[in-house]
Length: 250
Image (cartoon, rainbow, N blue to C red; front, top):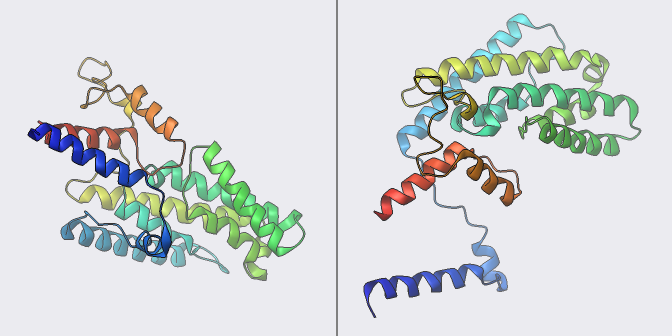
């Protein structure tokens, strides 16, 4: 058997193994192991340092500029992970952060006011917030905590009513996004927010060639649509991955 045949046979065996359903407790436990991380140590350090700076400034400004009883929502800690560790992710973009915070706060306050029972109000707050975020194209996981906190927060928080949406929620989101733009763009190799493909134009005002992999943006988006699940990857990032795959095969 030639080299190509051996490679095909090996690939076929690997594909067959991947398609086999998991069986037994050993396989189940093996699936719980963390996957291999491909982020180099310098990038890990940059993520940690930029997040530290972003949170320090956000907290300091919030305490200095906002009135009591609540200066900062804890969700900014989770949002900082996305903004400073995954700045290219669709989940970390400015509209995702700000839009999700505002809509989730609105849903949370409405649930706290009009839904009887803390458990039911909490569930509806988070569930409706997820639906609203997906519909408004601002899915951002930490915002689920924003909706939940409007329901389960203590009496001073609930007493804020819809003021909670502006202070501290919208203000926190604006501060964090602004700092993400400033800090991330000071780091070599980073761009935040990422370029939107619809507005990337060439020297004569024409849209740039579709993608480096040869697939159109429509085709890449169709792939993500067919996948059908929320995924923190953009069509541009998928294109970069496909280009790397093609380059390694040459």
